[in-house]
Image (cartoon, rainbow, N blue to C red; front, top):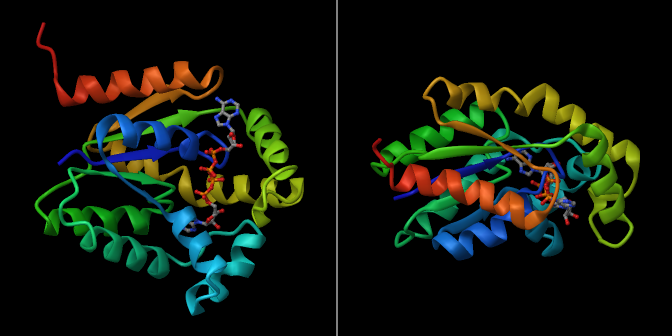
Length: 196
Ligand code: B4P
C-alpha cells in the first residue's frame, strides 16, 4: 500500500492537487474537510456539533476526526493506498493515524508538505470566498483564525514525521501543473527508488 499525507496550511492547494494525484496514482482520497462538510450539509448530529467550530475557523475535536478516518479506512478494504488531505492536523491525530495503519500492517509512505506564503494563502482564500458557499472562507478574520490554528496546532505535525525522515517540502506557489509535477516526482522517487 502507498499512503500519502498531503500537508500544508489552509489554501495551500491540498484539495486542488489531491484531485489530480488520486486520479494519477489510484489512491483513495480521504479529506476530513470534505467529510465534515458533508455531515454539515446532511444536518447529521455530528454535522450540527461541528458547524459552529468550523464557521469560526477552529479545528474540530480530535476524537471526532479520528473516528471518521477510522470508519473511512474500514469502509475501503480494497484500497491500494490512501491520500490523506487535511489530516492529521494535530500530533494526537498523527499518533492515532500511525496506530490505525499499523493495525492494518501498513504505514505512511511519504508526507508532501506544500509551502506557500501567508500573503498568497489569504489572497487565495479571500478569492474563493467570493464565489464559494464555504462558511470558513466568508471573511478575512475567519481566514486569519484558520492560519493561527494551523501555526498553533498543525505545523508541528511535520516534525512528528520528520523523525522518521518521511517529509518532503514542495514549493506550492505558481502554476498548478508545475506544482503537480513536483509532487509527482517525489512520489515516483519514493515508489521506484533509483540507485546511483
Ligand atoms: P479543509 O477542508 O482541509 O480546508 P483547507 O485547509 O482550507 O484547504 P483546502 O484543501 O480547502 O484548500 P486548497 O488549499 O485546496 O479544512 C476546513 C476546516 O475543516 C478546518 O478549518 C477545520 O475546522 C475542519 N477540519 C478539517 N480537517 C480537520 C482535522 N483533521 N482536524 C480538525 N479539524 C479539521 O485551495 C484553496 C484555494 O486556492 C482554492 O480556491 C484553489 O483554487 C486555490 N489554489 C490552489 N492552488 C493554487 C495555485 N497554485 N495558485 C493559485 N490558486 C490556487
